[in-house]
Amino acid sequence: MPDRPNEPIIQLADSDKLFIKLRALGNSLKPYDDENYTFFEAVRELLDAALTNYGQLRLGYIESNCHLIAWACRNLLELLIFTKYVLNSKANAERFAHDRLIDGCEIIESLRDLELHCDPKADTSILDGWLASMTAQKTAEGVTAKRYLASGDLAKVVGMKEDYAAMNKVCSKLVHPTSWSVLAMNKGTNSFPQAHDILFASGVGYMSQIYLDTNAHNTNQGMKPNP
Image (cartoon, rainbow, N blue to C red):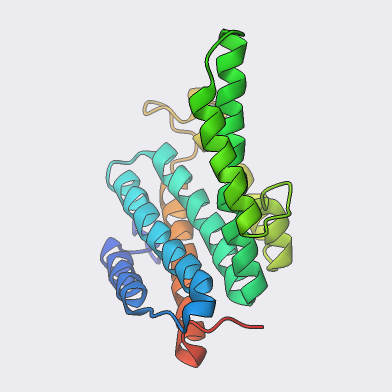
């Protein structure tokens, strides 16, 4: 914690330096070989997502938008959990990659269900075609899982159960329209002004751990996954 009450927990200049280091690390990653390209791609995209969410975290911090800070903080927490999970093994990286198809199918199915709810006679041929194509890709990649990996479940796997349970609850209260976020967090009567700095610092901390974990793996063995 800062020595003076009004001093930020983390200086913006320091978090920006971390952003630059993480970006440089992401740009330096190279696939180990064709067989392990999925692992490399998953790690690279996770880092890129972390950089994007830091941009949102930073914007929320500058504009004193606690909702945006909470959104980006929670995203960085989940990205850290995903990164730890992917770095753990090749199988985990491939399982994580499978989720894009599981998620995609669920998105299309939900849109189709909504279309038919609004109009039972609606033409869903385009959505049906997309779903068929994605289902075929699932078969080609050997996707057998029926459900996507839940962040809370993965948090337990990577040893972050308590971190996720606490911070996800805090951020969810601020991100979603809850009684607290609507009535207690307005600009006139902010009941928890310290949340601004705490959430920013937490988000930066998650980004820092993403950098440390990925850099350690890359330094030790490049983008070769663990067995």
